[in-house]
Image 1 (tube, rainbow, N blue to C red):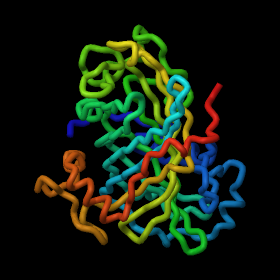
Image 2 (image 1 turned 60 degrees about the vertical axis):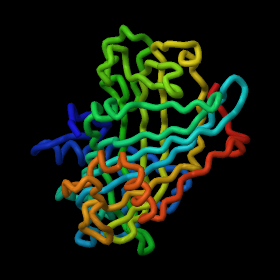
Image 3 (image 1 turned 180 degrees about the horizontal axis):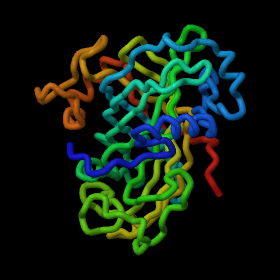
Length: 328
């Protein structure tokens, strides 16, 4: 896979001597919100809750060695208000994640810190309106390049827990402040990028088998919290905040912006070691000796990875959207 550029969120991509200082300042000044339903996970608001984190115990030297190449599978559920009909949609994502153990000084209770370099390999979306399935091309995903964020490791009640810093995906846009800056509303905005190189602004999402095309910009902000199962598996929950603006389209349906409301109680993810250096085999479908995004784009291998991890896909059910409140 060609990596054309590296983009990251609040804590991404730093290298060199200044990186240690910048990372430590970020961790001691920023609050990392836990995914809903993850009360067992430590709060990482080190600026205001240092003593609370110190009380968790742990300490240097007890880190589980998670360095290596992993595959991450996540599912996030949203409810869509489509012309009065409230429907559930599930976003299914595959990523390749490379973890690098950092040797920076750690705060009290923090056992290890890992730099995570992430490539988005595959996006599988469920049908919404008129049973039409939206899709994006592998070319667009390849053009994204890598995102860099971090995992912080602690131990609570004998369990090894990892909580991520903010991971931001930007589709078709380059924001100075990836987390909170308002998205462009016009194709003429200089922040809009022709991500997939098709001559249309932003990224192009296709509805159905070429029924229509939507040109859009999108931002996704993810936070992960999971429990390590030894050296080779991480399972947990995530929050995922998605915002988008439609810049153009080829038919009225593709110009319609539906109202989304997240249903985070349904979200889950797993990370499984893919490089053969743990409890599981090397997940290499094409025989090149490396676990890559190309391997995950083969259904048989992706299914084998899920089976190895015991990961079950969500079953879409519109009844899950009863009682969900939509933004005004």
